[in-house]
Image (tube, rainbow, N blue to C red):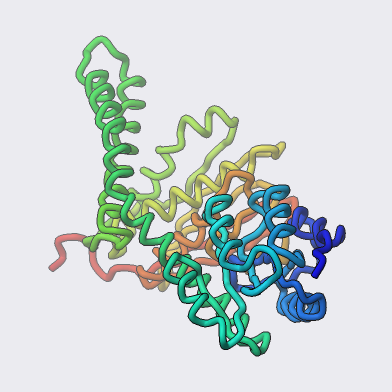
Length: 379
């Protein structure tokens, strides 16, 4: 059967997928498919069914057409769904060429009953999956999800294996930084201001070393000790860490933490991560603001409430429910992990975090933590 070139509208949708307004959100990372089948009716039926489930799909009536598409639009396809038996090159030959062309692309073969033994050869060679005809769209979706989970597990295992090597690479420059900072601290000729800056650098290095230790536990967080601590001191230390950044950005900071100690039971390192993230977010939010004011407030009632307030542009109302979701971010260079990490740590301390915001007027994050009944040494 003669192969036809890919339809232009489909080609546009795949290459420009970030501009497709009608694509519904789904819990999958394999969003963009290439369907290869020499039967036009089957091809269109699969495309319609998968589109109804939220996938975008390009079409190819032959293996050669599929390879031409992959070469012309590298990185635009997450998964290939291909028939096995076709005129010219077959699905197994497509698999072999795809793996040399783009090894990150997954591939599922569609097979008739009599072709199972042939496809087992492909599976033994590293093909990701197959589905036997006839099948329903739901059965196909389940096979796509199975391949996706398998791929994610492989990627995660690879990352875990790389962690010790990455930690070692980080450790070497950190050791150099610590050595240089310590030399500055012990040199009597240096001013107190320089020594203060160096002390801040050493504190930051020590925090990075603690994070490295967590990474060495293969992604499992090391068990952290809790203690009775004065949350006021923790907040002051966190604010002081950004002193240079506040000066560079022209930001005025005010704190209202009271005069008496306020004790909570928690892990100091974890709580520092919470408030450093919130303060940094506030400072970055005010980058383009005319008025730049950061306010840190502590209130003690039945629980301890800490308010981190900025005069940034605010958070749109439709985004406030998603800001604590992992990987959601509005920053160009953001990872979307900061606020999800903050929420996780706060909840592990038995607390809550909420946000109030008005567009054009600023944002305040409110962290509530249980108050310790007594101070340290009360036992």
